[in-house]
Length: 118
Length: 115
Image (tube, rainbow over all chains, first blue to last red):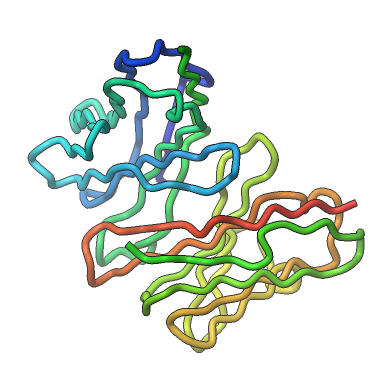
């Protein structure tokens, strides 16, 4: 069974500073994908970044980067130059790779609330 | 990215009634899913909506309580039946393209309060 762990219930960061949100995972599948989503108070789930288990490079999307350490089974999200609008809940999620019977099903961590201070 | 809409965006319902939530995608997608997020909790998968056949439910969720339809590749509905206050949650539709890379997106969600 797949499992995602986010050990930081809440994080605080100063505006314009960088912050790292932790995520560890557990799976026996060799092929899987890791996602980060942002959920503001409105409730929508905003896709931020994706990392495939076979990707050689760490994923980056603008101010977001994913620090993927496969041997440690960690997929930490790094937000550079934090902005006030980054204050939200952040979820790490995992799904089985293509071809599996569970493809497309996301398993979520418990989330981390990020607060950006001016 | 896919543009996903959900209706209604929110509702307040009486105990014992039912509510049907619609999910519309602007393009054909292979896979559609329904998730529930109870207050202060993470997201939990309710079921996979299969086009033209019965949905596949996760452990703890049953068809009588959460009937799902998916008549085509762009539309699905989730009904929350015989509601109780414990059903108060955000319900989110999610879509994925198996033929594509990694894209998996969510609709804006339906915030349901049962009184």
